Every structure is written in structure tokens, then in C-alpha cells.
Image (cartoon, rainbow over the protein chains, first blue to last red):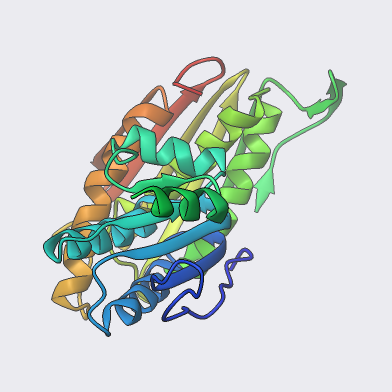
Length: 120
Length: 155
């Protein structure tokens, strides 16, 4: 696997008060099942909105994106949103090509996420 | 892995003859598809692609693998990379061919739903990333293929 280890999901982020998953490396068909399990874990407590921090992710293919879309659908069913923290151009390009850049709440870093959250 | 080559140094990129073929064959393990991406990056560089085009080719080759659905231990994926000048053709053949074209034996319903969703996203990506792509049956086997020319695609 090409550098696709991740940190364990954090049930609640102290600063954001949202379940958060930090992911790093290449998110491909080898990682997608793991990603799905980790996202499932975030929803166990009944969360509606979650944060997926892709700051350290370098690659996203359709299988991993599909897992994120499933999370997006789950959050929407609960009236929530999925926040993605992402700067990597390749990942932003994948989101743009598939027309999903406006479906997720995108943030370039956690500071921006916190600021937008405070504005709501 | 095999390559037919003899080299020149052109603008900082080692380019070999105008035509070269690289073939790799991997077991149907998702962990090993990364090898196809590495190969794609290398041959993209040899075709003179810029970094964005190389990234696009890496992703596109990954998506060829996705197009077959879930992989299993009975499957092999054989990739043939052909570079002619600044054009790269990639053919990915699933061996043996899956009769239903879905793969999926032994996978959960949720797995298959996820794969179907991935395949729809994959088609969108391939449309944008490469010059042309498609799927066919050749010699009784499922083949997914693409062509990417330097300076084309959204890059």
C-alpha cells in the first residue's frame, strides 16, 4: 500500500465538536473498505455532521470518493453535512470533475472550518 | 515487468525510442494496483507529460482497474502500456474474464452497491482525464482501455 495509513477516527473534535476522521496517503480501492468502516464508526453515536480531514491525503479515486458520497447521503438523511478539509489539487480536481465540490462543505484547513462554523 | 528501450536524454527526461511497450501482470489484490499507477507515472513522464497530465494518467489507470468491479484471488489484471511519441495507450485485461462482467462473487450487497457507485464516478473521471477510453471483449476476455495524448484532456 502506498503510504495510506491513517489516524484512528476521533469521535469528537474538541475544537469543532464534530466527529472527525483524519486521513493521509493515497485513498484508493485498497483503502476504501477501511475508510467505510472508519466513517461508519463516526455515525455510531447518532452524529448528523462529520469532518473528514484530507489535509495529508495525496490521492483520491472513485472507490474512496464513493465512500465519501455514501457518508454525504447519510449525513443529509439526518439533516447534516460532511465537511472536507482539503488542499491537494488532485483531490479538488476529482471533486470538480464529478460535480461534487458543491455538495460537500469544503475547507482549506481546520482554521477556516472553525471560522465558518463560528459564523453560522 | 519488461521494457523495450534504448535511451537518449531529451530535455531532462530520459526518453527511449519513439515506441515502447511495458507489460505488467498482477494478482487480483487491490493492494497491488499501486504498481500500475507507478508504471503509468513513469511512462507518462517518458511521453513528455507535465505533472498534471501524469497525475491524470495515474488516476485514469487506477480507474481502469475499478471498471472491473471487485477483485478476488482468482483474478489477474494484465496491463499493457504502449507509448508512441507523446501518446500513451493502456489496456487492462481481466483474466480470467468474468462472465457477468461484474465480479462480486462473495461480496456483500453493500460492497456491490458501493462498487456500482464507484463505477459511475469512474466513468465521469475517465471522460475528463483521457483522450478516449472504452471497454470491450477481446479473445473472450474483458478489456478496459484508454488513450491519452500529451496536451489533451483537461490536464
